[in-house]
Image (tube, rainbow, N blue to C red; front, side):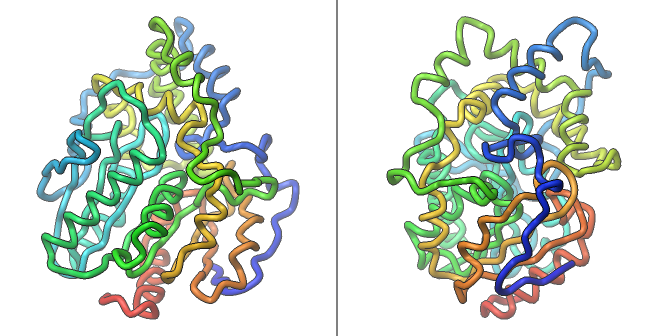
Length: 350
């Protein structure tokens, strides 16, 4: 693990994924045209087939399961352990859920009250057919944070988010800075070398008409089924890891959660670009609390050259792990030790 507190090194052009100028995500960030192409191919008979998985899609994490009202619909929280609160927020992709933060949930339940959130449209939360926007996700974080603060009687919490969800957490923290003691952003979007994200407040990358078009008279579900065939989910996890040696339990959970009724609605908004904020670089720069950003060096998601915009800010710290885009799966001990050191420096109980 490399610790960076000032100017981050530049990555070579050879390390950049094709199309790095656009938001991409696999599980974390898939480019829109690639999503469409692979969805079409994998929906054809015989392509991307794998054995059906009957795992309970909401059984990955231990703890108390409860639902709170967020934007008028239920969002699921999984709460475990005792101690100072840690909020964990999964990434956004076609098969996302709180299963993506499992190593951190299991590790920190021994010393903290860990709250792992299923964002609207994912996991055990409401998956109804509605508009999925950055505002919806940000408001879900506001509701969750308010609930945790009241339940535990604390003034501020420490929170971690992954990939695109870093944008939602950053916006929530910029809007309610006293509610967050510190933030940890893992492989955040909006900081690739050619990203220019200084648009109008709360504007998004995707056109307003595209989600409706993608849903269409049935083809949205068809496209989603193609993208979430077990073999295709494995393919994109391997791109996220930068290796064929993925976490098999996460793969099983991703396959299972993608089969839930309504599972296609939020991912189609993701595909349209409607969940990517055009103003996110301005939001990152407004954060006043301590922020720890980390990422890996393998796989498709290694271009974070725009973190140089934040390198001279005294409240930002950086760490690079010799892993894929989810370093806490591969290097749990190194990741948690580095995060613990950051939390201690930020004045948080560890």
